[in-house]
Structure formats: C-alpha cells, structure tokens
Image (tube, helix red, strand yellow):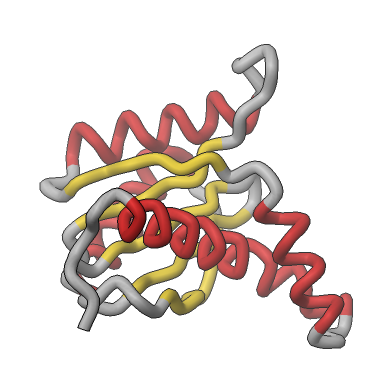
Length: 143
C-alpha cells in the first residue's frame, strides 16, 4: 500500500510518499501550513494524485502533552480522520528534525537550502519509521 507521511510544522508541512511495496520512501515538496482545513485540502489532493491508501502523521510528544505543536497536529489529525476515506495513523516524530539536519550537514547541503528541505526530509524519516514498524509487525510481503 502506498503511504503519505506528514511533518506538520508552524510554517510548512513536509511530505513524503512510499512505493506500493512499502520499501522506498521519497521526500516530496513541502507546502505552506494553512491551518487544519487548508492542510486537509492539500493532503486530500495528494492522496488522490499518489493513490495513497493511508496517511501517517508525525506527532510531537512532550511530557505535558499540550505544546502548541501538539495542538496544531491534533487539529490536523481531527480534520484528516473526519474527512479522508483512507487510514490515518500516527508516529512519534521525536528526533526526526535533528536527524534530518544531520543528514543535510553530512551531505554538505548549504545551510541556506535547509529551510526548503528539512520538513520533507523529516517526513521521509517519519515514513521510514512507520514502514519499518509495519514490516516488524507483519506488514505487506516483501518482493
């Protein structure tokens, strides 16, 4: 099944997609965050375009459980779950932005380009974590 992954930030939403065999995740172009309903509209278009069977959303987790990021992601999740006709799942996103920064640094990508790349690279890492968990838990057969 093809999955879309989202890294919902205050300015941009990073996006990644995997192949039907759930073996390869690819970062796509991030889009500007435009509130829960605006995000839903863009994601619904992406689900149709990529024929995705599910959406996985990275959820920030804090001890208090009530950060602005968590409230923003919860509002987006509420819209997605209410209005999309595909599975909507969550993954702990802790550490994905730092890991994406390290990947960009290791690849010697100029820092001026990080802002345009970081969110979708984090979404790719979220998707890779989701796919790895599905494989461990008896996901689709590998070809």
